[in-house]
Length: 170
Image (cartoon, rainbow, N blue to C red; front, side):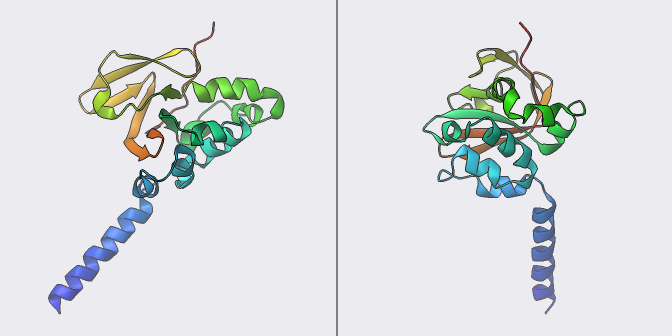
């Protein structure tokens, strides 16, 4: 009976930990059968990114063959933008600017965390480069920290980041 109680307790703790981890949903769906959009859509914490991808008409592209590497900002990252910025970007008249920002979060090819090197510069689909900084186990993409790495999709890989990175001005 004591063993059964222990097993139930472990199962309940495991279930509780899983349900409270914002990235656990996304990690649990990390698979070779889901494309990047479906993978991001499986996480409540990436819903703003998915809405932005839809507003930018980038769904078909990110469901395509790829491979792509996406540095995916969380909902909190979008909420941290100056007040009114996200709402403005989601308007049809600002679609070009939204696409510029979103494609700055995408690198052509499949770049896993083990492929990254400190000081590395990676060209984004948008055309500008992002800088990789590695310090111990901490990885930064420009000023954003990688919160969860290597979520594998059928057409690439997703790395969840804690800030929206903005392309440099001309």
